[in-house]
Picture 1: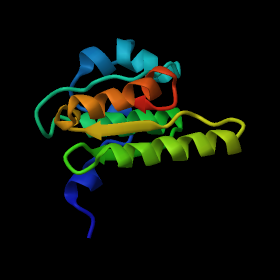
Picture 2 (picture 1 turned 135 degrees about the horizontal axis):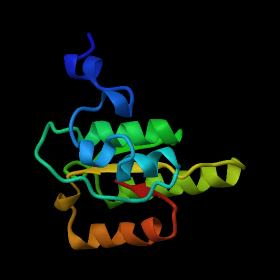
Picture 3 (picture 1 turned 30 degrees about the vertical axis):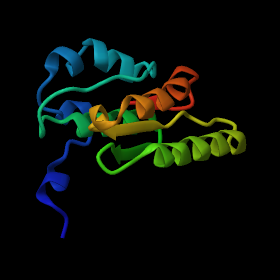
Length: 129
């Protein structure tokens, strides 16, 4: 059985409730998404406000792979595997689009783990949300 939250999850930005100052018509984040000028960013807020949903919508609209991890259970080796896979895919596919790595609870990563991500975000290997 599919959970109700999954069934009701918005399928596009028009169905997304809240944050109209960011994702409403002609607003900054919506423009970035629609013009395919996506970049790494941090979503902050309490549980249940739509951070994961918005990240999924961005990936869907951009036709990018969406890799979801939680910093509570993932570690440096898990991220290393994503980087390795991304590099391999980039070599195999001519029109490869940089994937979105959604790292929930990133504040739980220690400084060393966060610093490990930095070069891959800076050089465009991944888009981090």
